[in-house]
Image (cartoon, rainbow, N blue to C red; front, side, top):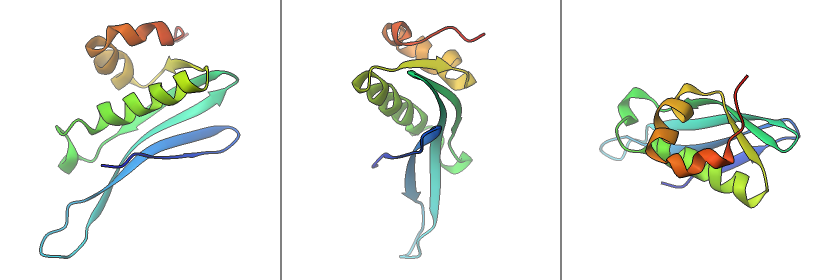
Length: 103
């Protein structure tokens, strides 16, 4: 799975297109993570994986990629997406140091 990144001055997204087609007939589904740029803060507000793709670690892969991007660009993460706070950071508590409090 290749995670791609698209961003503008104000926001961005990490996404992966997954082909679940059978018999040579493509059917593309997309998993994505969306964020808003707030200066040097990446406010991750939405992570979505289609039901057919859940349980494959896609949300974790997208989130890990976003955290790696933030680290490389000296950004902090504001985890307003429930998945980030409730699941990802509980699994990887060492990354909590990269976050700012959600108010």
